[in-house]
Length: 413
Ligand SMILES: NC(=O)c1ccc[n+]([C@@H]2O[C@H](COP(=O)([O-])OP(=O)(O)OC[C@H]3O[C@@H](n4cnc5c(N)ncnc54)[C@H](O)[C@@H]3O)[C@@H](O)[C@H]2O)c1
Image (cartoon, rainbow, N blue to C red; front, side, top):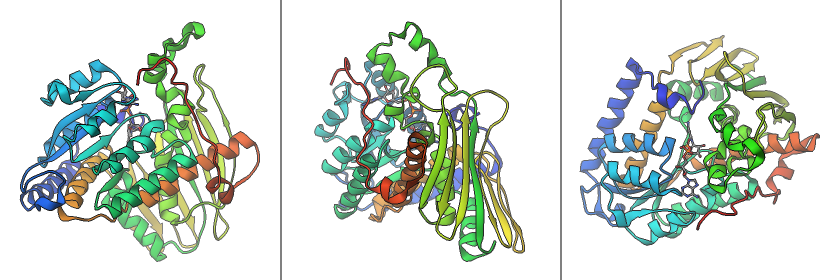
């Protein structure tokens, strides 16, 4: 199991349902008090009009949660592929003239002025340009993690979010762990000092061979441009590589707990899988302020062991977190916490409710962006250190102009 496949698993549980109903209730209330000037182009009590950019697995799965919320309506969609946008368009009764295709489909969607907000669920390489265009067009942005594949991309998202705030637009990055009450409470207690001085920690993302269904595309070494795009998770240039695209979930928790960016990283990475340009095995040691050492490792191959964990060891206790398990603190000041339930779904439900509440109540602080930039840069730092085979400093990362550029030859605009 991994974060991608867990969408299908969707294990229902009591906490999950309770959380969902709580969020849904809060959202319904917000929906009835919407102020017209706060929702671009919408009248009071009308739904927020959405355009989905990227009608693939996560996009269509999220769309159902947006629909269930009650305060949204899909009025436009864009996907590179006609069949994808049509399948989505039929399901959500979107006018045929509000369905767009090609690499520039999102631009046509925005020019159509049929939406108040866009939900970006495309391969990470495209996130910065699509988010920037959304803000430029004056719409709210709900963005999948990771925000970008390289440092210039992260800076672009940071600037887009700042611009969004200045233009009274909401910009939300969809991480799940930061929404969960147990994660939030445990992190708050650690930051308050409940485990004492943190000395070291570990973060790991261990999962099976996600994307293996696309290996046949690479047979004969003659992959078509469309299949290259479909298999984006096997492309470092389109995804940012495994450390950025997937492992970001645990490095986001680590940087959140420590509330710092790393100062230095040293690492190694390898590719076990037979195809693509991604490295599915990573080991990085990060040094944080205060001589805190974080050992990170990940694997995206094989079978039989899955866990997304982050654990920090302090002088007086330990915080232990698992995306598919429990969150707790042990030591002098224990926190029982508990099972986080179906965080994959509940985190998205919570973000969808927050996005609506922020838009309708005019909250443009866009607080999910800064931590997302920090953790995204942390993943890139690990990738750069492994590539270099030598330590990389935060300054080096911050100043990096290196870009990942996928081969889009043969794709239509
Ligand atoms: N737990 C999580 O937060 C989580 C889980 C899964 C995926 N994601 C993220 O969601 C995003 C989408 O992932 P997915 O699993 O849905 O992938 P996917 O391949 O299933 O869907 C991506 C869709 O985007 C379309 N597309 C590709 N390039 C496009 C472009 N330039 N313009 C418009 N459409 C384009 C594809 O045709 C496809 O339909 C990624 O950023 C991924 O990291 C997040």
